[in-house]
Length: 232
Ligand code: SF4
Ligand code: SF4
Image 1 (cartoon, rainbow, N blue to C red):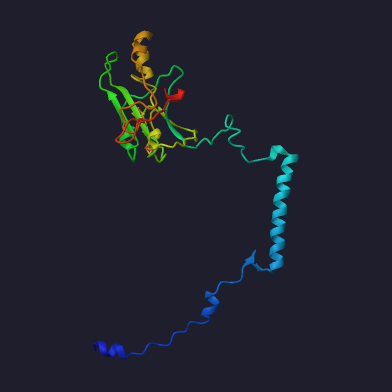
Image 2 (tube, helix red, strand yellow):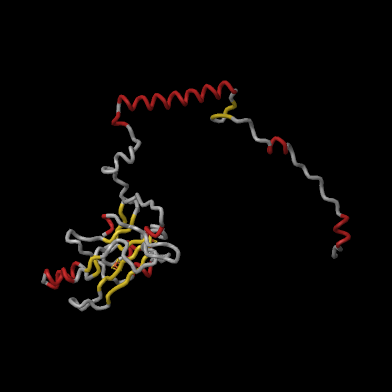
């Protein structure tokens, strides 16, 4: 048998029992540690907490070695960040200032948000092999996911603990990470001629262009004065 719309309208809904709805909806009185307390009890507990905090602070005068708070920036020279902290991407250079980047561009291709641009010289005149020209890193867009470090087949990237990166102009967050344009440390060593090797190492500056955001002049924005000694 089929039921018509008019039949359905005539069916009476059963009465609904909401029980003690009010007691379920009204928030209970504030309590501490699950027990209801009077106002004087709450005040006493608060005073005890403040007193305990003051005693802890006073104890540091007697036992300074127990202080855990870092006195930053006074301790800037000795402050060590945690091993896994990722503060800044760095291209590793050896003690002679040589890097191991071949310009293979794997890190550039796998960076999820295009924060790396690698340009290269297709054939270095001395080695006959490709050589790195610019390794540009955009700290302003980097998410510090560490993928570039993990995928580099030559282990020549690392994250450093540098955490003082605040600037007033985000163009200052675009860097050349390579200190020179030229072949890798291994390729330079194979040349066997120190003078010839040095001649292949064209010095690069931290903010060197041509990269629009490397402090260069933009429409209506003058060139940045990055004139600091660490600019090189
Ligand atoms: S850490 Fe991640 S986002 Fe940053 S440059 Fe490397 S791959 Fe790109
Ligand atoms: S840093 Fe490593 S992955 Fe990136 S271009 Fe250089 S060698 Fe290739």
